[in-house]
Length: 328
Length: 286
Image (cartoon, rainbow over all chains, first blue to last red):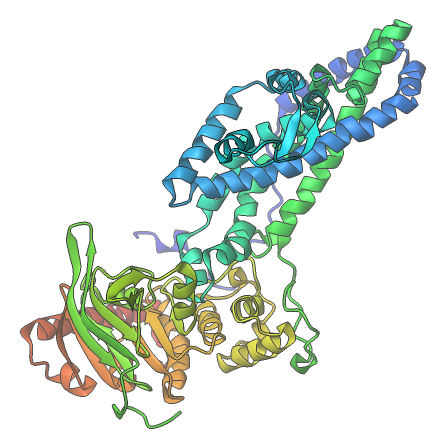
């Protein structure tokens, strides 16, 4: 306080007022060292990739467009990823809601399910699914549970079964593949969805209830859309994991799948390395597409919260025009 | 609507010996209160006196431990069948809540929806109102609270006062018979309190039945038909705002009002001092 003139810029017009700042920036010599090291390493890598004959690039691309490979890519890899994920997410949300319910039985069931399926490695689950038919030597029937007991008690004969399926065919096929992936995924998604739901402010539930919303409606319209913001980023990770884990379906065995098909070309032609490169390229490309999709979905659900996702408002046009739906 | 502040007909809200316990703590210890149609009642009292809890009981955010509360002649939370009380189902409670509007201290707007979508949400999805009609109604209500041109803004793009006004419009969209306000201006910056109180004053003038928990003594004096002073879970004193606020009968009321006045004075003095510090010419005090 002894020198007030120092603290404040001189106000008198006799003094020259400071202009724009033109200062020498801080130098970062180590950045240049890092650049040099990385440049050398990159050159070595490119050299390895392009000049090593083992890669056999023409063969890589030829293998990638073989018909069985494309079929495996679409059906086993992409198809099972999408179906496994859809049912995994639905199951996970259901499990999360059960876990947060006031009903202790539902809470317990959800906990046990999650405990069980998180403990089993996916590969083990898939292999087990493939031989699950052994449990049902007479096949799987749809009908009245414990029908033989009831029929016995009533002194009747026959059975109350409507359809009977071969259990090996059910669990060892595509259905079993999706079932294994989805049931494992649901356990992980349950935890993700639960943390998402818990992240929504308690006041939101109260506001929804105060407007007369039933618990279900409040969950669907108010809680879940906000929980999505927390749910989506880890779900994107799960989706990419799922894509990669379809390569485990060989264990079922499900053969219409990218990795198995690439490998079988490799073992037929003894070009084992190039087919792995081809598979890697496919997984890279697909993961990249999923990442773009994830970014888009994140923006969509960030509306009203993250600045980049909130559209600039338009001024309201002619209120009387009422163009129909209020949603969106 | 009809005659104001004349207690004719049955009360809209009737609480008899309302008791609320959280665990072994008794928060409300037998509240008796009647609110008639068109009446504006302000609940005053120190924090922890139970006034917010009482408000939340009326909207069944909390479940009553003892006593009874009726709204429009209907028992809240439970119903009597075959000589026994049965807890009402979620759906039934939701129906009862839909007739009561509630405004929260922290606004609780839905952040993923624009102002208009917030207002339209419940009429469309709870009342099954035609979306186009709900939209028209929503814009009318936003205009009522002076925010028609903010219809497409998200809550995060609005000031606290604007958010609270949207919240009032959202509650009104369900055409409630009763509006509950839980310290609606406590979370606002001082310069934003006025706009919310103005909307509430207009609402009171239009004949809405209102129960307001507030610390705004001037609002209570000017707008309320009756003030209720609560302390430690009981109603200490109630009556005409002028009488209760100017010459309270009960020592506890007097002590509370004195304290509030002292705090207001301290705040005013501090504000005045800050204005002086800012410069020699303080702008006109609003």
